Image 1 (tube, rainbow, N blue to C red):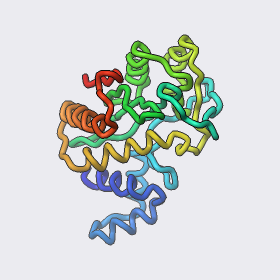
Image 2 (image 1 turned 180 degrees about the vertical axis):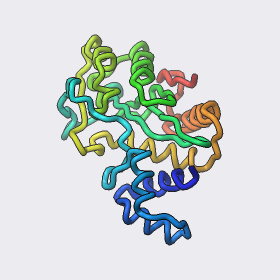
Image 3 (image 1 turned 135 degrees about the horizontal axis):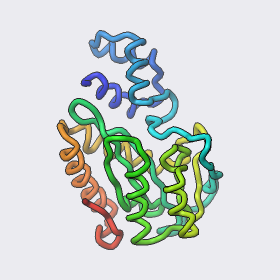
Image 4 (image 1 turned 60 degrees about the horizontal axis):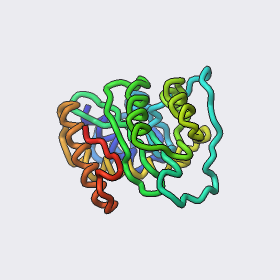
Length: 227
């Protein structure tokens, strides 16, 4: 598991590394590992070279996809655009998955949650909490099955929120969440040894409190969820 965590660290810093370059990099660090083993780790983490994040949400061909609405759109106001994504968080002996919803104008984390699986339920529940506190004009996601699921999109459509989805292979369409993941990992996760899901939840809760102070925005006025 230690080597898997190291691959995650290197990949976060160098998302352009394919399996060959990753194996070579690890070998220079003194790790006795071949490309075949690196390839299996990439499969475990759903990593893909060039793209700057793990592919943790996979498309479902039977679910409706929506066009990307934000190209050349100027973000002028709070609650104009919200977006979400999922990332891998390491814990001792395995991993959990972090989902967060942010406001593009303020970069504020509106709500978040952890799950031990990639089922859509925790994403739908988090979205429902956020929509109970306010609405946005456009909500952007990737084309993963969690976000194209009826339960997720229907919550948005019921509130007459426009749905925008990243183009295939264009994860940088959701760049603000990608930047958040880098901050979470480098400023929190990689500095700690987390044994349990509870410890991961507490660490992330503490980090997001710190993160909100950097934005100079009172947590209570933005509906930040810490539980």
